[in-house]
Amino acid sequence: MKVNLRVWRQRGPDSPGEFKNYEAADLNPNMSFLEMLDVVNDRLASRGEEPIAFAHDCREGICGTCCLNINGKPHGPGRAIATCQTYMRSFRDGDTITIEPFRAKPFPILKDLVVDRSAFDRIMQSGGYVSVRTGAAPDGNSIPISKEIADRAMDAAQCIGCGACVAACKNASAMLFVSAKVSQLSLLPQGRPERHRRVLSMVAKMDEEGFGNCTVTGSCAAVCPKEVSLDFITRMNRDYLAALMHEAVGRAAGKEGGAG
Image (cartoon, rainbow, N blue to C red):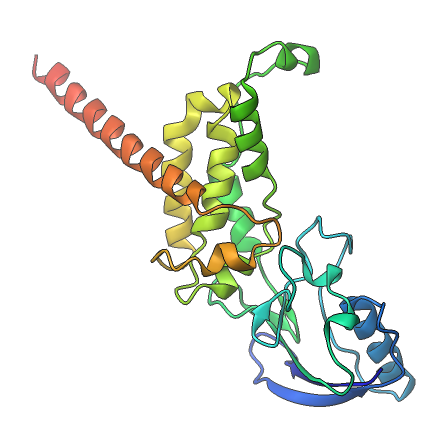
């Protein structure tokens, strides 16, 4: 199998970038997309050329590191899979494949196909955790949670934070990611005490990092490798409104108490 690659090459964050063409020949159709890039890099290195920089880790669709735009679509032509789970048999012999990094201002390009997604980490640090004591594992298991709620929390927790939702959105919105991370905690009893502070903090940090607004086009859910539902955005908006009202009531009560 042989394909022609148009790959985005950029030496660094402040350097101009451009597409460069490479021929990838003698490929096994059953190799993964990242294995194909490994083969191309081995051949580049053997010729004394600089290999293509791309991010990867687990290669099992778990870590969310392999964030590539393939022919204009985050993670490639498949549905509900990450780049590392895309196989060369998804393409035809002789195809031209365009490979570029996720395009979003909050995800600056570091080099070639590698982007800095640490904005997601900072959003999580702002409130994506439970700080109350939950006890040891047996204690946690003694808290009754209905199967419906547990299943919904697990659906939200499937988000791997790859950033495909941001790359697919015309506004570079991170609402699907943030709503999943807010919901996976607020649905459970252990996360409910902090639900108001959490949603306010995480949404504020999302805005501070420069992510755009959600206009509910559904492009985020369409490319999510874990099929996280748009329903979580609705849930987060509801929680956010409730948190704002709770905060306003608290301020009003404080003023009345001070006046008295």
